[in-house]
Image 1 (cartoon, one colour):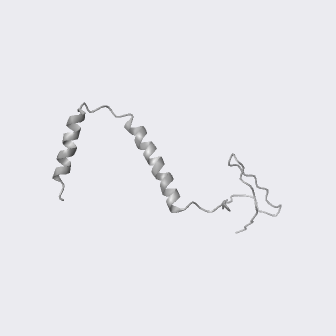
Image 2 (cartoon, one colour):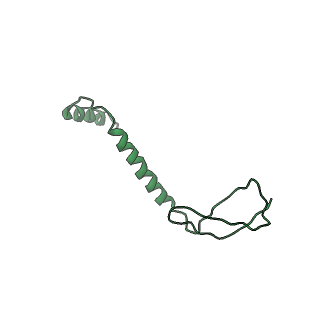
Image 3 (cartoon, helix red, strand yellow):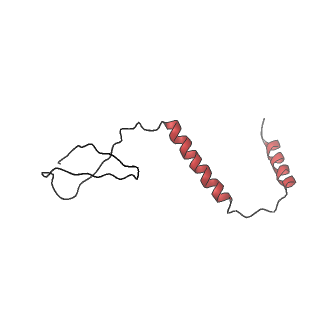
Length: 87
């Protein structure tokens, strides 16, 4: 295996350009890009994922047909469910 490490800049449009030395072998290769920026904390990543999940949920809710139940019927069903819980 032949490896070559070099520094590069990822541009605003998420592009990068690499020029390898002449002695680098031609053919199939694997590229791994490591950022100098710290990885987002687990909490930050979770918040972003939850926000994305909520956006997807709200979009899917827009496609549902109304159930035809009144607010009073829904409130009564919620109250019955709550009353059934063990306290």
